[in-house]
Amino acid sequence: MGLISGGVFFKILAFLCFIRLSQGRNSATPDLPPLRKASSFSKIQHEAYDYIIVGGGTAGCPLAATLSKKYKVLLLERGGSPYGNRNISYLENFHICLTDESKNSPSQGFISTDGVINSRAKVLGGGTCINAGFYSRANRRFVKDAGWDEELVNQSYPWVEERIVYWPKIAPWQAALRDGLLEAGVSPYNGYTYDHLFGTKVGGTIFDEAGYRHTAADLLAAANPDNLRVLLHASVNKVIFKTRHGHQKQSAIGVQFKDENGGHHQAFLSQKRGSEIIVSAGAIGSPQLLLISGIGPRSELKKHNISIVLHNEHVGKGMSDNPLSSVFIPTKDPPKQSLIETVGITDDGVFIEASSGFGQTGDSIHCHHGIMSAEIGQLSTIPPKERSLEAVHKYVRNKKSLPKEVFHGGFILSKIDGPLSTGNLVLVDTDPNSNPNVTFNYFKHPQDLRRCVYGIKTIEKIISTNTFSNFTPKDGGYSMEKLLNMSVAANINLIPKHTNDSTSLEQFCRDTVVTIWHYHGGCHVGKVVDQQYKVIGTSGLRVIDGSTLSRSPGTNPQATVMMMGRYMGVKILRERLGRAAGV
Image 1 (cartoon, rainbow, N blue to C red):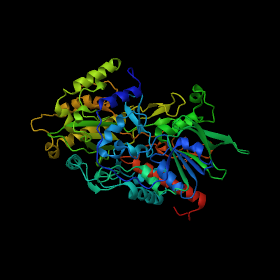
Image 2: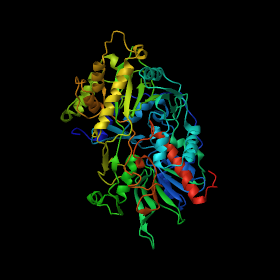
Image 3: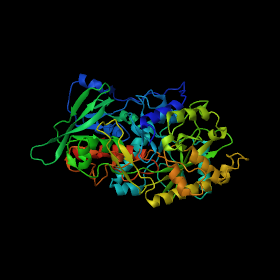
Image 4: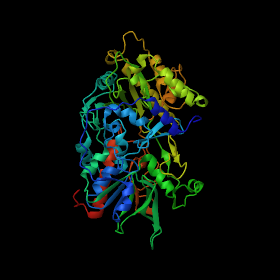
């Protein structure tokens, strides 16, 4: 990147923000099993577990809750608790989490080799604690292609929804997008629905009416507390394998992990048939842990002096991220804050969404708001070799003199569904808390670029509708060319910019690409895991999370990944106990 390390970069962004937390509201913590620090493991009576789940995130929490109904489960989460953290809990503080690089931050920043700033979760509840909250199911074709039991899928989604999902009270910017989409021809209007349907709809949200976030961690309230042990700040650094007598496959028998004080521990499975280690550490953490544990390409493992358990050239391959481009639209007045509520699902593989406003402070003009910041003159416009701490300080000084109009507005977002461009993940070192090198190869496939252009042209149609004329200043004179140039400068990534070159929509797409945190892959079905998510060539080891997916489900993956945790939990119980098992 030619400037500073990823960690320092994010600390700079955090420094830019004058944080004032919201005051005066509280929401009761759900009735959860005890959440203990990992260091307590040495003080408890040691026991063997039927299931050890690595990662208490979007899939791991519903999976642990379900399996605990009948079996002893140990859930190991490398981050802390989401409860009591106002930056997680309240919608108005959404952007703050993404710039928080403190020791106990729920978000760990990383920069892909493409130059796109990203975040991975580091908290119980995973990505549901730091995302924009939108909830929408996958379509039936996705379910069919995944080989899932449709009846069980249709039971598993509602299990999640009745516990943590709400209908949004649609914000003005979201209503404008809805009406603008319909006026631009993205029809029919499908109303409020969780289903993935072509046209325009309002989806669900994990923020309740008070703007309080509900996360996958809340699903642990459905667990059997007598069977579930949850350890926080437990960083698993290795899966332990053993060759069983009479078997050729290496069997996973336990894990090694470090606690919050650096203490080392081991936890082991029971000797019962069917006991398993289940890795649910996400699209970054799961392939990373397999590699560190000795499963992956032989050359990659030898590079880091890792003992080879199983050669598999596909671990870490096929990484993909849904590229996002956005257009900033100045408004007459500061719009009310809103995250994703409305979506236009086009028949060309492009999703149109929107966000607006910032609510955490009265002086937002002094605050950096993360990846979707409505600002002009970002550090990203500086050539890589000139990005320095002094450049950052200069930016801070100049920021107060920026025209107010750049803080009055909202974004319309265009996201590509199922990109054909893929990349890879490779280790930097063997520390599970380090960020590996991740490459997504945005727009390497020409069809992805073509679809991005289609999305920007759709946004142009929406902006031209009567609906949006009510928002923009009458004398603003904002042509599409001017809006695109403003958006290029406002966008945060580390890709060199081509301002005043908006005549090329292809170049605009390349310049403005950011993430919407829907990356996936690295442990694909049929290559790393089988149809039951068991790691091919081993026994006693599965991977259940978004790393197994070849495309991101629906318009937002969290609904399907939580459903997947519940679905696989029920499926495993049925396999082990018979279909009569009540869960």
